[in-house]
Image (cartoon, rainbow, N blue to C red; front, side, top):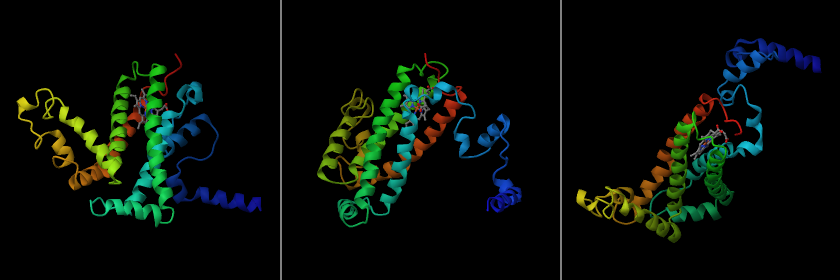
Length: 257
Ligand code: HEM
């Protein structure tokens, strides 16, 4: 049986189709192992060489990787939730209830999205804390720290915009309070420093732009939905790619101090 299996394997490995996808054989040399990782779209996300300390859990806490994993979970469950949710004042709340009580595994899906999102916020803070503790913001990694700050802000904005979508009292009032802070934006808020001098009023300042009106209403729901489901996730994905690329270009994970 093993012999038959080996013969099939051998003939498959020789086909043009196999060779066009997997360009390297299984020869166990250092160079070949390196090429296998480099030439594969999925594997090349991993480094070809890993410093020993990079694999120590106590050094990275694996928090960057966990943040990324949780982002993937929220993205996949989020797309599934979109099949059941309509971002209008008329349907949003009812759609959430339908999802929770009628859709098979709907409650599970919604909670997976919610808990992964909460987990992502916690993990990104812990990751930043670890990077700070290990001094990994120092040269040559200053730029990646800045990219990290963009990632942190985007993660928090994703969390905030998602909070409005259930369209219940809690979310409407939380977002009312949250967006009131935008009144005090320097230059762009009608109560912020130099805002009134620049002609900012409740109906033309940055808060107005965010809400699509002077208070939280149906246009806000639609704006937050678009931000939450399209703009912010894509923006985050692009900067995560830059972040990972920089980790490689900066020589992999920094060493213990
Ligand atoms: C969506 C958010 C983020 C994701 C998915 C992410 C992911 C990662 C991953 C996978 C690594 C490799 C090492 C590790 O796992 O610890 C890493 C390293 C790094 N991250 Fe992040 N990160 C995020 C946010 C941040 C934030 C908020 C900061 C700081 C403001 C930051 C700064 C850095 C730096 C400087 C490194 C290099 C660390 C070293 O060389 O030891 N990242 N990130």
